[in-house]
Image 1 (cartoon, helix red, strand yellow):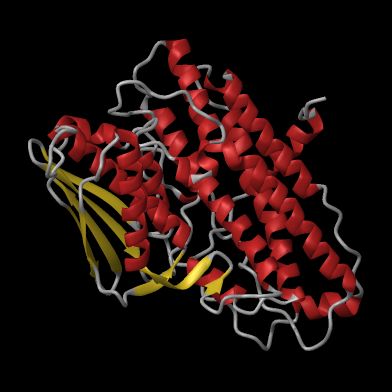
Image 2 (cartoon, helix red, strand yellow):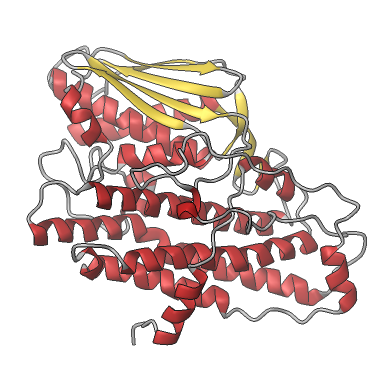
Length: 429
């Protein structure tokens, strides 16, 4: 029998949705997770056991309140049920009974330094009238709980804590797998809505909702992925990694890998003997603190778009395509990647549409396979108009941005700004 949300559960979700989420910065995650012990992992579990239900509840409520019948679409209902079920699993996980001594050690962080406060995210304007950007929808941030405090790690921890940490990590794993297909299922819901309403494009309200929804999903998956990785790494770890964050992310290596993947997909899609060449200009020793998976995704998506534009503008029979250039510059505040192609450019009137979900220059939007976003390697050359908007959210999540400048009749420059200071908070809605 399939899972159904009870009225009581929905009441609990509405109660949790009244609380604001707590933003966390990349630097805080790294400083906290540097030496994961049973005690610090338990404190992290406690933070997530409070934080994740709040974030999940916000999304359930927003999915429930979507306008114009979008909330009735079968795929949207399916996504809402996934979020509600995950909320139920986290809130019903039994907590261990702890002695006073253990409780005191868990809260005894007076002698140890607190983690630095996160700074506001520079990519998001607070109170942005577009409906995209005001932290916590204008709710007060004074309620913010401190991200993981340190603990007194001088003695052994009781086995109940170890068992709880493992159980909590297993629950997060299950939730992460359940939500693997959210992006494509939600996209399917938008397709259902467009067909039902006979619309070509989605309006600004739906666009703002999708921005908030997918940004929130990036945050939830980041916190879950980080916690699972820290739990695994407490046994064996690579010194340059703290969870899923690499303190020495080498930009040149990741860019080279993204170039090879994008060219392979291009050759495969168009049946080319050799895809257009891509020239990379980057200091081989440039590294910074980032999540390699996020950077790979953004580079691959933007390069794929450039290659597609070049092939379709110049024709598949062309012997010698113009070279696409990738230039990486290192500033004090940002590392910027510029991707310059000669793919014919985009008309100025069409540039806002590039950031619209479900806008695609492909003649026919493919039917969506729910397994599609489980594997980047199966990524089609051109899909359902999600590559650029989602890449921009990944960039903004850690205080960067993605910008596009085009010369119609010549080509397009994409600027990927990566914030290297790592102290900006997540942009929460």
